[in-house]
View 1 (spheres, rainbow, N blue to C red):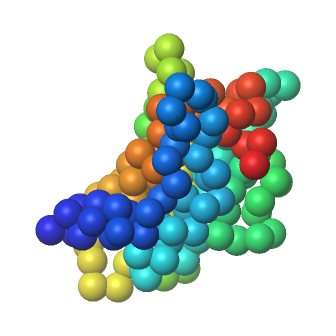
View 2 (view 1 turned 90 degrees about the vertical axis):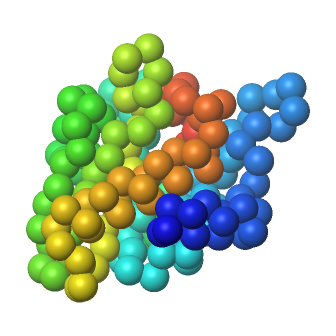
Length: 155
């Protein structure tokens, strides 16, 4: 039910098309995460982390202004390097980092979803965070599959 509502909300809010016809222009990651965060009131922070060509990763979009453009944290790097979801407790909230945008067997990005867990079990909160991360991945589109070349984070 939540997935259907999330998908419908994204459709109705009109997330910009990820690719212009025939081109490889990427969706603006900041617009994507802000739109998705608005449809999920339990989310306290939503961030897209992108691998960089020079190595390391940065938060290329975030609902927390102090995160945007800053180096990604260890858990964000771990999710991209291992392909596994990383979960941290943050005082009444859960920080779930989900690897996204796989290309050639490697992850070029991760989505950090920090959310309130009131009324949910830990497993339910993790499942919801993964749904939100997949909505972000879908909103960014397949043409944003390589943040390493700067195309995803150039907005």
